[in-house]
Length: 294
Image 1 (cartoon, rainbow, N blue to C red):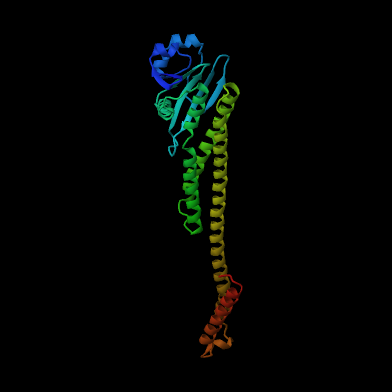
Image 2: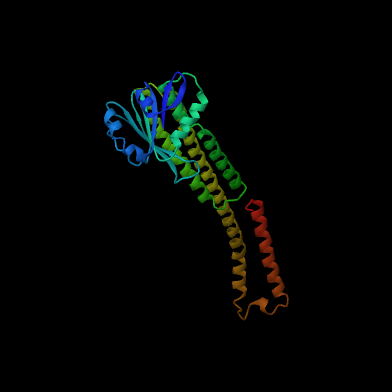
């Protein structure tokens, strides 16, 4: 697909019109681009479009070359990958999916037939790439807030699994915004474009960092809740142990059955020992209740 940028916005064109235009965009798939030997020779495009694993933009003598690895929201193992050559008056996209082509069509509809420039297109294109990201970060923030509420309510089932998934997602986007910040700085320095994009992506990175800190705070709340539960269990065990320790002493003492023990022949011996044991239990429980152990 070929497009011309000019006084009537972004218009679709054929190959010849694109080559003769002052400013244009081309979109190739990887197979078609492999056969574009003449075009590569004309613009001295010597880069190899290997698989992109991160976003970068390199400066060469006559062009900028970038590879993009755009994360798909909520799909940790899927990404939109494409490469782009940014020449003086040309943009050449190479992709297997239709991600870049769809954004170009969306921008065509948005600007209509108004005058347009390459600098504005670069700004608008990369702004469109991250246009809905702030909404997605808001969704992640609500998920973390929901987890915080459930923890405070005492529901901690599968907390680590859920939190790990969210933290991985936040980390993925945080690294992505860092790479896009570097790209925006290169665009601003070399093409006098991307300044709005640079400000926006920095704000998104700061928002992602805030989410990382929020997730850590919620994890601390979870750990505090677990500690409180463990303390409650220990308090209960302390009370039980303290109650039964004197009872064990009494049982051991009166279980010796020596011949001269007066209680052996006393008809009220058993009720008396039982009463003493009950009194000990009541006194100990009263003590712990007064000290607010439970």
